[in-house]
Amino acid sequence: MTQTHIRSSSTNAAFTLIEIVIVLTIISILAAGSIYMLKGNVDVAKETRVESDLQNLMTQLQLYEARNMRAPTTEQGLRALVERPTAEPLPEKWTQLLEAVPKDPWGMEYKYRYPAQKSKKPYDVYSVGKDGAEGTEDDIGNWPQTTTK
Image 1 (cartoon, rainbow, N blue to C red):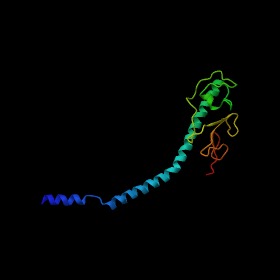
Image 2 (cartoon, one colour):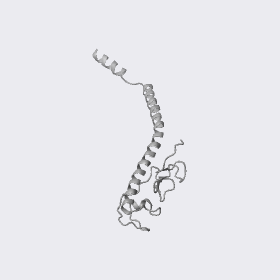
Image 3 (tube, rainbow, N blue to C red):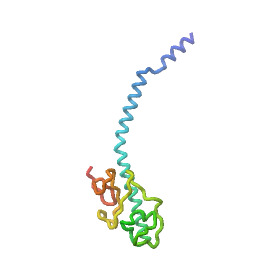
Image 4 (cartoon, one colour):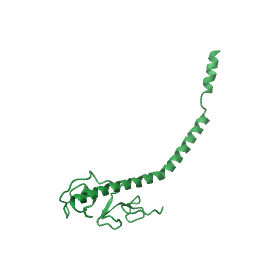
């Protein structure tokens, strides 16, 4: 009699195919909703990373300027933080300040312009943003950003 009791309880403990399908459907709906909600956060995270990279580049440019009594020219660019410039004016106390010039989250190189055209600082440092086109609304730089989104 105990064997019959054990068998009947083990068959009742299993999930039916319908129950498994319902659970998988609910999990799929929740996962799809989460991915949709996180999509906007990825863009925000990329913009935050650009702002952090720009702050780091600005700090290194200030250090370059303090050591060499002038900022790199537009031609020398941000490469002057990685390699000794070969174009005039040559820096007298050059030291390598970065291992490599970072790329923005969209895989593009950061842009540098001296003298500045948009910033109140001596130079512009910026990313062309996710559209990859310079001079568009989504450029992110060391100047006050306008929020039009």
